[in-house]
Length: 217
Image (cartoon, rainbow, N blue to C red; front, side, top):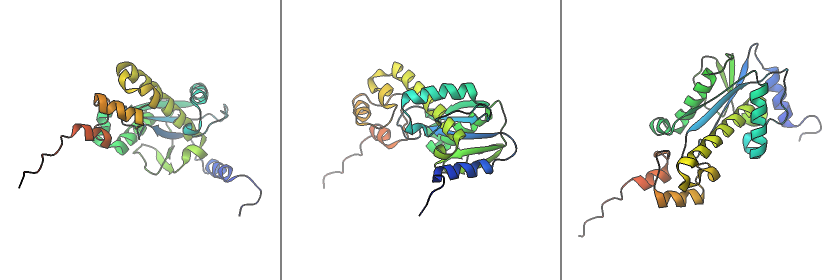
């Protein structure tokens, strides 16, 4: 049983700080692996120790308003940041895991400051030119990963709002492409649009023809 002292999350953050290498370190995270439509986004962030940002945490634990405010602060105060994506077509061609890793590669490659280490949320490392460290639950314990998670989520939400302007019948501005009852109903009613992920089962089921009935015997 733990008695006194700092909470476990603080211990994990301290351990990360103590293990920092000499040179820039970026946090990397993605947004949009689960939805049935739209691109998957990733962000990479190199924080500036001289310009700390209060309130960084997993983007899923923040309100939309708080995420947007922090996104603006990250863009203003980070030493470097970049956002990239992999398209719906790339998701269908590569699979969602590989497309997510591709988006991460693109985000890190676009950083104005080359990192010596990338800390990536999860347990699957993208191929990068620098060292890579995966951290399960990293968006809760590493501020740079938290910042990346916020930028990726905000960028994807903005893209889904733009997608709503093209395809208002699906309600992308509300559910952001996730398989909500509303989305599934509109998908059944209207069929998939060009931005639906055809490799995902609920979309694929609407595209695959029904099997021919067995002949009478």
